Image 1 (cartoon, rainbow, N blue to C red):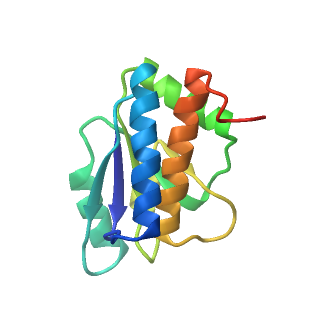
Image 2: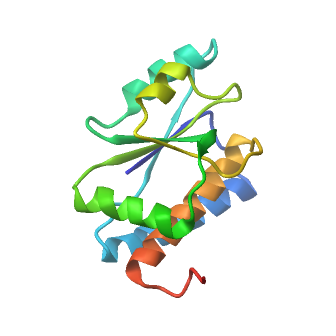
Length: 151
């Protein structure tokens, strides 16, 4: 499982939260057959087109591509967990993609297997990483039957 993000996340509270949630995900996920998440940070000058090219090169072959995009589908946490479980059960690798400041290239969006949104507002990429990492941990917890997610 990959988290591909345009830009670098420096040390600070956001990095600490991402690291914490992905560590939790790795521990809980191991018990339900989910691999740990590897973070791939990419950079390209020139906007969305060049960013899409470096994202393409970073994608694991055959991975389902899930974009984090404000136009993406609004999902409940249980629905997101079910989707993660379906990919796991189908032995499909997954790559979550967070674009740069200008968003994601239209061609990349057209090829995505899924686009998810964290609300109608636009969020800074560093906060999207935190929210995605937390939702991955929550999904693993739901799949494990843990009480972390309360209805």
